[in-house]
Amino acid sequence: MKPENYFSHFDIAGFTYYDGVDVFEQLKVGTQVKLVAEPENRYDRHAVAIYYKDKKLGFIPRNENKMISKLLQFGYEDIFSAKINRISADEHPENQVGVVVKINERK
Image 1 (cartoon, rainbow, N blue to C red):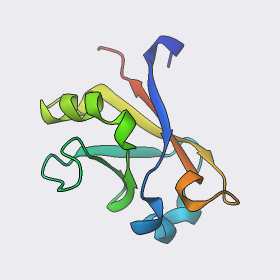
Image 2: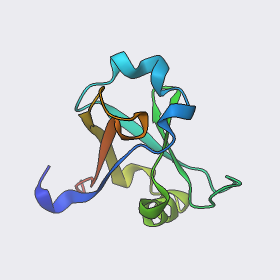
Image 3: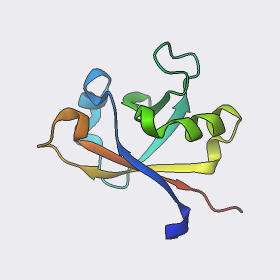
Image 4: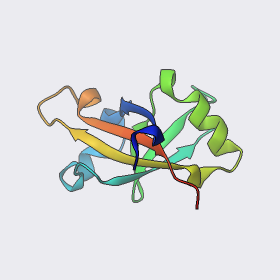
């Protein structure tokens, strides 16, 4: 992907509380993850969950999720490509896994 396709990057929020620990050893830099809007989330109507296969890893941080959430809710799920860009096992759990989001090129 080209640099102009870059959209955002962040650490996975809530990693401690979901299934990340169960799949941590399977995660690698470059691993594709899925973004899923959760408009019914009682804590944040712009919540966007991050999944690896069927395991919820956590969320896009609140200060990064609004635009991505809106686009996902309007049916543009395939506009984004999200991949793990950093794994730091020695960091605090909330800072262990970084994700980069890019906009897919039009076909």
